[in-house]
Image 1 (tube, rainbow, N blue to C red):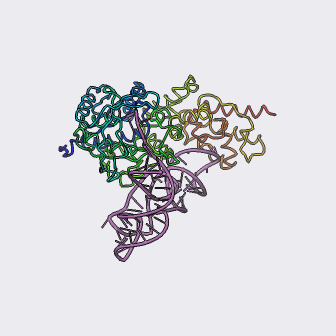
Image 2 (tube, chains in turn purple, red):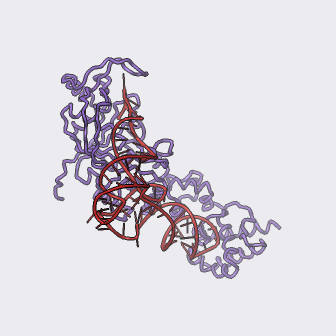
Image 3 (tube, rainbow, N blue to C red):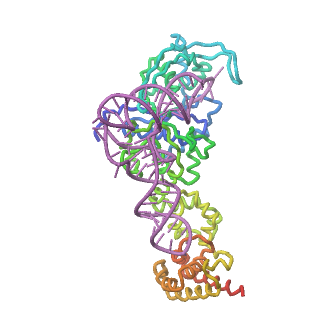
Length: 453
RNA sequence: GGCCUCAUCGUCUAACGGUUAGGACAACGGGUUCUCAAUCCGUCAAUCGGGGUCCGAUUCCCCGUGAGGUCACCA
């Protein structure tokens, strides 16, 4: 590898542990990560936990776990709560040189102090260039002398953020567009402490269907919720990357390496993007299809309801029905829905059903259905035990079914095996159940018909 | 309301100022099918409005309109 000329890139993702990592944060982290890796730079994770009231270790732990799950590996990690002495040093310096001052206050709401530290606003016009948005010009006069610390040991966001970016040598600040209004005042602080200005890249917001900023009331917004619903991290990454960015060609599914290689800040959309769960589902289904059998099996077991897992023949059977599950779910949580619809249980035990349900909708006389089932029994008996696969089963039954009307024959056969209206075709079903069980279930159906007269 | 930002199919988006405005998701229709699922094929569908600049604007400029963000002793 040749040495990258831009390898002095240092970027950070700076979540505050006042909640779980949400979808928007994950995308910011992803873009930051991609930019760092593409440039051979350093990716720092900085926990902004200066708000002691709302920050918790539990949230921090969860954010770390989610980053790991998404495989967004960082090179260094810091906690602002462990850096209070550093901020204090700057605070002293700023008060000393007059760029900040202790201010007497009249407390307005609960928790307000009667003395805080404010930044002395020089009231100037700030113009900054943003990689995505372009030039932004703001007059900082109406910002006033904003608060930068409650006291020497309790600095707040704008101050700690700027100091850390400076101390850590951050070259590019990648964050959501909701931070644009914060940028001018942070630049003011930068200038006051003599920090050079980093390059800004404010990425567009993720929107709910009504186009407002994605929030809790829109349903699942935390990445862990998607994990719990059975989404794959690769799918979430791919989906998120395409919210506001694209590789410039028609590819939809990209590998991690391709994302790193093709990522380009300049191609990022300026406007917000609506979070479209349908597309996420599509990505997830694609990635599920690509899963190895082993990994797929692992996740199936994780999401399988215990009622099914408790069947004595579970381990042996579940392996066989993998293909059926694979084509019917778009996320692993759907396995629970399959179970609710009774689409799993019949693989493990003789199903219960109304006898008249065995009749095809065009059939008038259930005695015909019985005759068809008996003939199917006949045909299936001829297949050797070790050749009982879906192809041979179909061969055995197909001509007879065509002759009598496929619905007349195949519906009852399938119903006798599954006991429900919707299921895979009878050939697949029979092969998965095995010859013995298939014969037994069809015999049961015949007996049920006999018993109504 | 002040400040800031944005504007191509329903959604995500593509298009050196010159394309029949392309792709994907969804929707719809069809093939395959006893049912469902899967899969394959196809169809519908967009440049917010008005002015400029230019031989020629989705693209550049201005004005509207609309949408969003933000205005904490949170981050």
